[in-house]
Image (cartoon, rainbow, N blue to C red; front, side, top):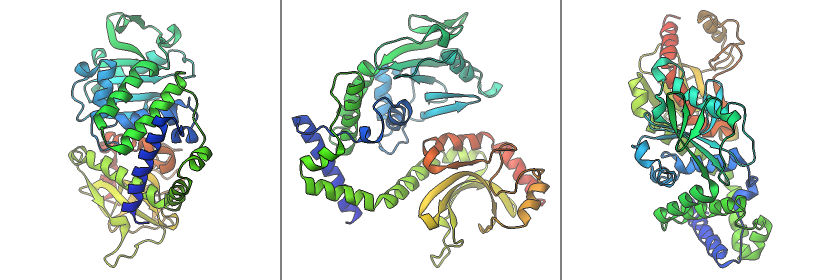
Length: 413
């Protein structure tokens, strides 16, 4: 089946599913075939972030983010959403925030609680880490921070979680400092956001269906809807032959679909940071998966379709890259790796140990991947950390001066 036909079929499949659901003939929900209805991270935080992120694969820009900010009453306060960024499991120093939204000036912390209890000083630590930043230059005024505490039904964070902060109306207050605060719910604000988003995407069938399926999940965890039918019933209940063909087609093309998704996702994120990358004196190199002029691979195992390298570098240099493993036909890792100027490399090259000794890294086991400390390579696995790709790229750019200093030293190797 050609891809154009394939995606037309997917669109028709989603439309058919929506019609059956509305008429009560079918209640299959694909999200619940993959995750538990109460999975905070992989289901709820991931889906919410996927829609809210202006760089998301929905290609609707900041529509979903604006609608969300309207639903929680923060649109006027937050301001510009054109350059906003949304992160899942946002890491700063030693904490991890469920969902973090920022436009560089305003910052929103979302703590997502479905079944999990509060941790000691959890909200307090989030506020203080964002306020203090990772350096004085990155500090944030308390008045530019908002905390949203999300649960199925309205509840406030515990006193233990708040630490020295207290709830006073629409604010959390600690002495002379205050940040905006609102306890929001899946039952009210999230359902309102989903319904308003559906109205805005209108006839875009796949997005409407995706929102409809998620609305079902939210109604289930807020006990306003019964649980859903299994995939087996869905496939055999209506148009069995068509639905089975679709499932087989998806499975047959699984690797190609994932590869295409990875390539488009990565390219979109990198392109979205092009101005920032170039301002750090780095450039984006697209290598067509490292093919030569005859269309043959320059290396039999690995290629690097996206490289962010210094504009001025020597024979060897460290760069942020995306790795494609050709033997398994998939994207495998991304991170900071050493390269040769003509993009040829050999992991067994005896010069590698000499280079690391030259750079003062002789105590580490030789590796093409840069060590962030003596034990940890700057390398991330695609399947596990795809959702953090943008934050890891930002992390690389944050340490751009250190990377450039390392590359300057390499020039004299």
